[in-house]
Structures are given as structure tokens and as C-alpha cells.
Amino acid sequence: MSQNCVISTEEFKERIVRTRKSMQSAGLELLLVFSTESEPAGVRYFSDYWPSFESSGVLIPLEGEPLLLIGPESMTFAKGRSKIENIIRMKDFRESSMPDYPGNKLIEWKELLSRFSAKKIGIAGWQMIPQSIYKNIAAVLGEENMSDADEVVRKVTMKKSPAELNCLREAAKISELGFKAILENIRPGMTEAQLAGIAAGAMLANGAEATGYPIWCCSGPNSTQAISRPTLRKVQEGEIIHFSIGAKVSGYSASIGRPVVLGQCPPDTLKFMQTGLDAMNMTIDLMRGGTPASDVAKKVHGYIAGKGYGHTILYGPAHGCGQMECEFPFLETSSTFTLEENMVFMVDVFLAEENMGFRWEDGVIIRNGKAEELSSYKREINII
Image (cartoon, rainbow, N blue to C red; front, top):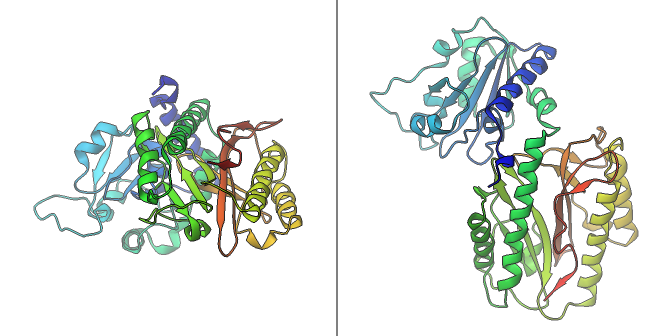
């Protein structure tokens, strides 16, 4: 992995500084950033630590050092990774099987929060935080002093730094290698799980620290699934086999999505896939700095509807991307934000009829002119 894909200690510290300014504007005295194993982005953004089995949090006061909050079993792991020096073990961040850890001294919220004079706390990761943690904090500070602070963090994370952009470029390049391995090995009779494994193996062998999400291979009737996991179904000729493949590099996740057909492609399938590909290219061309996001979505959805496929639209045609392959904001017809330079999006055109569907997906960095494409590898009708 290139040194250009490493987030420096100085950048981690600067993130705390910018976040405190955002907290101050929102009238917050404390910020708790909550993350899980499946959605680690918030905590990793501030600490470079990402939990395994357990959950975790970063507690940021307006003054004083931030704290990394972890479960009882993760101290040696966290010490080896965290850019935040102060690490606290708490029972509330234990794994969901709920061991008691008798004999271990674990700090409670009352003791922890007494270190601060702050009374108002914002929570980022509001949609994920467990009721148990919420109730235990409320018992100390009062529910009236707790608020949703996702917007506080989004103001800091939405525009990417040069180092973050390099990580995303590298993640996209490695994602391409995953799809390349698929094209070199795919044949009728292989299972969806086999094909997903080929992509994952190629990416891990070429510098990915992990997959950005569970790799998807969705074939035949499974191709209509917008969110999926591979099965033991065997792929066949003449059907859409839809791949979503993404690598994670230094915490940053990219993705490419492509449909593939083996053997003869039915005319209706070809027409449908071509409409999606044209909509994908149109989206990329329209996504320029200063453009209202809703304008892009309305034009692209209008094009798809004009081709007779309006009923196949589920969302999009793009969503934010960074440490999560899919993060705030979605680019939709109802969006109220304007595209700005150094925002990063996955252009994600997913369309599904009753019996077939596909995804075309590639990352873009917003520029004031034409967007910078993170990938265009085999963005074409792939009939093998």
C-alpha cells in the first residue's frame, strides 16, 4: 500500500479541532461518536480503531483530550491501533452475548461523565446506538440534555482531504482487480459464493485490508435484490449476473458494480442494461460542483422513465462514499444540498424488473468541472 494512502497522526488531530468548532456552533459540550463492527466509520475517522465483536465510541469534549471507549476485551488491540491515547474500557461496549466479566474493573457512565462539567451531549451514530447505552447516559445527564449530532460530524466528514482521496483512489483500483479476477474465471455452473470468493481473494492479495462490504454476486432471479449476499445458486447462461465488489484501504471503501451475461444475451435484457449504463454515464457527466443534487437526480430519473423503465427505479442515482461505501448523503430527487468540490460519491444506478435487475456503480470525486472518476474499468456491456 502506498504511503499516500496513510492518514497521518496530524490529520487525526486536525479532525478533532474541526469537530470542536462544529460542536460549538451546535451548542454541544460533549460529543459521543458511536460505532459498531458493521458500521465502524465514525470511531475509525477519529481514532483509526475499528471494533471487532464489540462496539465502541469516541468521546470528544470541547476542552481536554478525547477518549476512546471500548469493550472489555479490546485493550491490547486498541492500543496497537488507536491515534487517541486515552482508552477506557466499559461494560456497555461489550459484545452482544453479554458476558459479565466478573473481577474486571470497568468504568460506569456516572464516573466517566463526572470528569467533565458538561451537561449537553450530542450523539453521532444516533440511528445505531443501543437503548442500553442511551438509557445509562440519560440516567446521568437527563434525556433532555441528549441530542442527535450526526449533522455535527457530517459537516466535518463530507468533503475529503487529499490523503482521504488517495485512499479512495487506491481502494477503487483494488476493487477493479476483484472484478478482473471474476472476468478471468467465471463460467456457467459456478456458485455465487465461489465467484464472490474469487473477487475477495484478489483484493486481499493486492493490498486491501478488508472488503468494503460483503461482496455481492446476484444471479438470475437474485439479480433483482438491491441489497444481497451471495448464495450457493449456480450461475447460468443468458441471465444477468450482477456483481458489487469493493475494497477497503486505510478505512476507506470504494466499489464497482457491473452486470455480466454469459453466452447469448436476450434482446430485452440488453436493452435494459444499456439504459442503465447510459443513465450511469449521464449521472457522472451531470455531477459537477455548484449543481443542486436534486437537479441531477430529476434529469437522470427522467431519462430512465423516458426509456420506459421508470417503474424500475428504487433510489439514487448516487450516494456519498468515504469510510463507509454508502454514507450520507444520498443524491435523490428530494435532496436539498448542492454538490461541492472534494465531495465523493458512488454513482449507483440500480434498476430492477420483476425477473431481472442490475447495478452499475463507480466512484467520483466532485470537481468544479467534470467529475474525477475513481474507476471506469469494463464499464461496458459485458457479454462473455
